[in-house]
Image 1 (tube, rainbow, N blue to C red):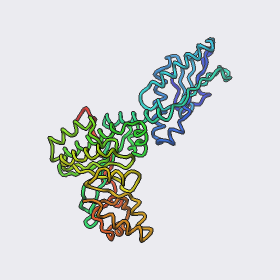
Image 2 (cartoon, rainbow, N blue to C red; image 1 turned 135 degrees about the vertical axis):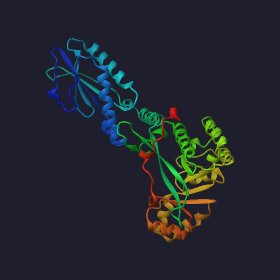
Image 3 (cartoon, rainbow, N blue to C red; image 1 turned 120 degrees about the vertical axis):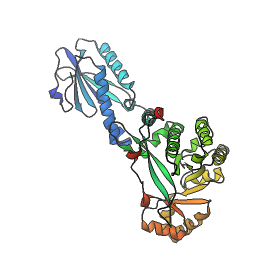
Image 4 (cartoon, helix red, strand yellow; image 1 turned 30 degrees about the horizontal axis):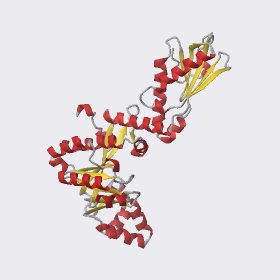
Amino acid sequence: MIQPASSTPSACHYHDGWLDMVIRITNLKEIERRYQKMISRAMDIEFFERIRGIVDDQATICRVDAGCIRVTGMLKASMSLSRTHACIEMLLRHIASAHGLLPLAALDVTVERPDGRPHTKVVRIPASEGRMHLAHATEVLNAMAHGHLALSLQPIFNVGEQDRSLYDECLARVILPESRCAMMPSSFIPSIERALLMNEFDQIVVSSVIDRLAADDTLMLGCNISAASAALSHWWTAIIDRLKRRPDIARRLVLEITETAPLKPAEAQEFSRCLNRLGCKVAIDDFGSRYGTQNAIDIGTPDIIKLDTSFLTDAKDTSHGFERLHRMTGLARTVVIEGVEDEMDLDIVTRAGFEWAQGHLHGEVESAMLHQVPPAHSR
């Protein structure tokens, strides 16, 4: 028996001779703070459905609050304390073994007598940081693999002729099936990095960008890859073979190496030379931030350098900052200034001598929801 989601504890049907279990997700607020509200909502739904699938048919399930469920009619009052503990521990193992978001949950089970007095309490130790990141990363990658990746485009535009672009950067979004809302990278990339799964993430995104190029021969697209992926590991084999067969696609692909981790110089240079031979271009993203400058040095001669927004910020504040920005125009064959938000920014980069810029002045030209990538098995 299932009580409506709006039921209060007093609305639950109590069974004589049975104990009540109150099961809570104790870290639901932490999940909401760490990720997004949609994640905590999706977890609450999974929590209810998982318990509904585990408990006996004669039991009553009542949602008390978000992340809190009362189950009546599953544990007999005549059971010994040790047997009660064993049953609850088995229930927790079933809940924790679920796929999806529930491995992120820390569970608190209070067992009460029918008169409301506590009988015993079993607390599951909260998931560790590593476990939380791994569970979240796995959930995101599974969603991407089943077609819930979307690519939104932002142009690298010409400063003098703003309707002309060098290429469009593909910005990855992950769409949760339950909410149809697009998750921004800031809500999942940290977990994927901590779980050491950036190679898997980059492989899906790069393959999807190549699919997009294959479908439209008028596009020239770029996408981010992590420093960890800038090496000729086994997962590049299929992508490189595909680009060898389609040099027309390779010539329209730009891979931007992010600044979040250092490169291994020898491997990165080999990787860059291989891509250049195929016809692809290699860019260093966020030069001047974190490892961006060192990564550019380690690559040797990147085709494109994208300057971190801090250069433009400093140029707006001081004449010294403007002079430094001006000197950056000769760093590489092609230099892009990021963070151009308005006409004032555009005027500064024009006077500094830049040809190419990126930013919300010409923001994402299309909604991520409009270009959802089909599942891998259908491509």
